[in-house]
Structure formats: C-alpha cells, structure tokens
Image 1 (tube, each protein chain N blue to C red):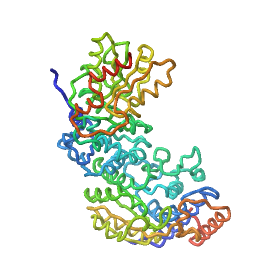
Image 2 (image 1 turned 180 degrees about the vertical axis):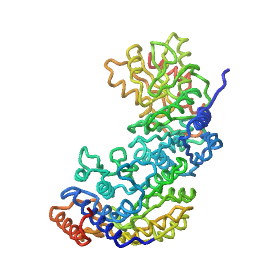
Image 3 (image 1 turned 60 degrees about the vertical axis):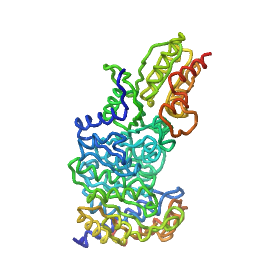
Image 4 (image 1 turned 45 degrees about the vertical axis):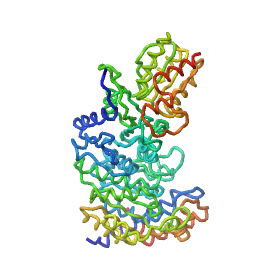
Length: 285
Length: 311
C-alpha cells in the first residue's frame, strides 16, 4: 500500500530534522562519522517513524520490532531517532563520544536505552540479528528484526555465514538493509573486494531481494511493506545511497567517513541542512 | 578401581537435564555435536537446538542475539575454535554487554591428543580471562562439571567452561557444592601448596601422594574457577607454605599460573611460585598420556619438579 502524501511529507520533515540534528550533535572540530550517518538517515527515519512496531514509552517491550545498527559507526543516526522519539533526552545528543557519556562512539546496549546490541566491529551484526529472529518463536513472540549493514561491511566473511544461516532457517521475520553508499573508510567499496553483482548474490543465497533509491522515502516504505510479504525467507533491501547525503561538500567523499569539520565547514553544513528543513516544511511538532 | 568419566560427557548429560528444567535454555553447536555431547540435548529438545554449521563466529554472534532476547544460550565447539575464532564477537557482543551466553570449550588442552596443534587449545584460559565480565571455569571431574553447567545458567553474565575428553576419576565427594569463585582444598598440607585446574587436579593429588613418601606434605587446591580467582585461598597458602605451585594443561603464560602470579605479586613475603604447564610451545599429535609426559604433567614428573624446586 502506497503511503499518502501527508505521511510522506511528515517523513521528509523527520529525515531533514534528523540530518540537522546529526550534524549539530557532532559539532565542529571533532572527528565524527558524518558520511555513513547521513547516508542512513532516510532508512532510519522510515523504520522508526513509519514501519516499526515500537513504543517509545516502553523501549524494552518484548513485542517490539528490533532495529540493529550493524554498521555501528553510523549510530549517531539512531541516537537522533531515539532522541526524537523521547527515548533519549534531546539535550544528551551533544555529549556524543565524550568522556562519561551514554552515547558511546559505537553502540553499547548496556549504556544507552533503545539499543538492541553492541556493534562496531563490522561483520558481526547480521548473525546477532539472526539470533533475535530465531528467538522470537521460542519465546512465543512475533516481532520483526531489521538489520542495517554497510556495503563495505559486506567485505567481512561472517556476514556471508549469517546470510546462509538466515536462509537455512527461512527467517521471514528478518530484514537486512544494505546502505549501499559505495564508499568505505579509505575509498570505494569495490576496492579490495568484488561485491557485484550484489543483488544477484543475495538472491543466489536464497534471500528475497529488492533494490531501491535509499533516499526516496516512498520507495523505502514500499520496500519495507514488500518485506512483510516474504514470510518464508529473509529479505534484503539494497538501498542505493550517497555517503554524506544532504551536505554538498560531504557527498560522495570518503575523506568524510570519519573526519572533523572546521568551524566554517560546520556552519555551512548547518545552513544547508536548515535550508532543506525549511524546504520540506520545518520541524515536526 | 573407580570408573573414569570425560568431563564432556558429564556436560552433555547435565545440559539435557538443565534443558528439562529450564525452557529458556537454548543450545548451539557448530557441527561437533557428537564430540561436544550436545547431541543429548538435541535429541531431547530439537526445537531449542541449532546446529549452525561450520561457522563458529556466526554461532557465537547468533547466541548473543538470542541471549539479548531473553534466552540463555550455550555455545559449543572445540575450545580452540570457540576462544580463538570467536574472540571478537565474544568480546564485543557478549562480554561487553555481559549477556548470558555460556561458552563450553570442549576437547581442551594437550589431552585432545592425536589431532595435533591446530586442535589443542593451550591458550583459551588466557584469552577468556583477559575479557572483563567473563567467568572462566575448568571443572576437575564429572560431578563438578555437572554442577558448573547448572551454576552457569544461574550466573547472570557470560561464562566460559573448559571441558575435556580425558577420562578422569570422581575426585569430589557427593556433598560437594560448586560455587563460582570458590577454590576447594582437596588435600591438606603445609610444606607446599599445589594449585591445579581441570584434569590436572587428579594429577596433582597423585603427585601429592608421591611427595608424602618423602615426608613432604602438599596441600592440593582445586582452582575450578580461574576467574574470578579465589585470592583468599592463594593468600592463605602463601602464608603457611614454603612453595606455591600451579599445574595446568595450558600455557603457563596467562593461564592459572599467570593468574596466581598476578595475585602473589601483591603479597609481601610470599614464597616462590613454580608454574607447571606448557612452556610457550604448541602441541603436536600424540596420545594424551604421551603428551602429558612430554610436557612433564604426569604425577611422577610433577612431583619430581616440585622436589627440584624445594631442594
């Protein structure tokens, strides 16, 4: 079912607000993972603000859908989503990566409310998501598990072990999303390993596959609804994205995978993202 | 002659009993369910058993996800694969958030035997002991293995249990109660204190009897929990005996010997410490007893080394 214009407009405002909050929480003069956090913002928006069965007043509710940020360096997008939902206080966002903060540089489930696991070492998250998905029927629950991976993360061999495990167990309650921004820490994701043909590979491993524009919120929501129909096998959404999406001079540049912005760059980033927020109609009340 | 039991067999039976008592226990294996004896659990509770295939790191991460969802997950493989191949997911996904995953490292030590160095885990205690929140247990006999398997389920965080395929006699009496973190004095004596773990408790007790013929009375302490170490037991022995000895079927770097050395280093006037075990070497193919002989871990050779240190 296609989402309506009002819902789409609401989600666009959420995504624009998320991007602005991501950059604002990072601030100038400190190294942060701009690129991957911004490329994932639309995907995280669609999950938390449209798709997932989630009660922000009860983030440990056993029936909740689970979201795991397997590419843990992009957790700022998730911190912002949790703050927008009220799971975390908005004032806490600027403490990101500071000494004593609950907002660790990579996800620490025992520190931060709303996180489902500890990630950061790439390649381990999909197995963990499998575990959450496998636990559901044993516990008599019927939640879905959404796991966001980076395309660079797919270089890690354990991902493909997990791909085979999920297919073997026909995990219809598992959805992998690949944030395919084409860049890793140093350069392009086709450096070091051959990933193509990516969709055909997932398909050959027994997964239901769809490929979308990862910044088209209508397409993202449609793909997430499509995954509901995959009851007898896991599904993967390959979301083609732009690393650093939303800030002109960050887009598509691997040097901003983990980098600091000087005060001028920071101010320009905030201005661009505020402009986008104004264009889509301002923050959501 | 008392009957001999391999700790892996006692574990498999205990796990099946535990599964009958606790519906929240799940068991994962990586294509070794006959070696690890999880086949007993598999046959009794197939809906709570996952043979994940030959992918140990995937198994451990999957177990972490199950544990985070409210289950108690027992992971099984050979000790070297579990501690070595899975070190990162154990560290980041299990130890860091202190999830209730129980890691049963089977066929540990030299007594793994003919498969050789690739399969003989001589470093697993060191690796697991270095992880915050991790408990490390190496039971001495079948009774203690059974109790440790149950105790692990009650413990809120992760536990590493070191198991073997070397037949050992029942050493503990039927009234024994295993408690995580408590060492047990198996034999009294104040000339020398032998701290042993796992299969080596048996060898240490036999060595103590040989020493007694020379009027050397050895205290033998079963350090079944290597972490957290029973430091009171070490301090007590350090104050009353003239020599401390550790015996382990493991590298003397970072294992029981390392743990006791760390503790002793903080005790003023402590007696010397003799660490017996594998001396910075890999294993090799051979029969279990041949390998123990080569690494001087039989009762006569342990006794001989202790006499040498006391001379």
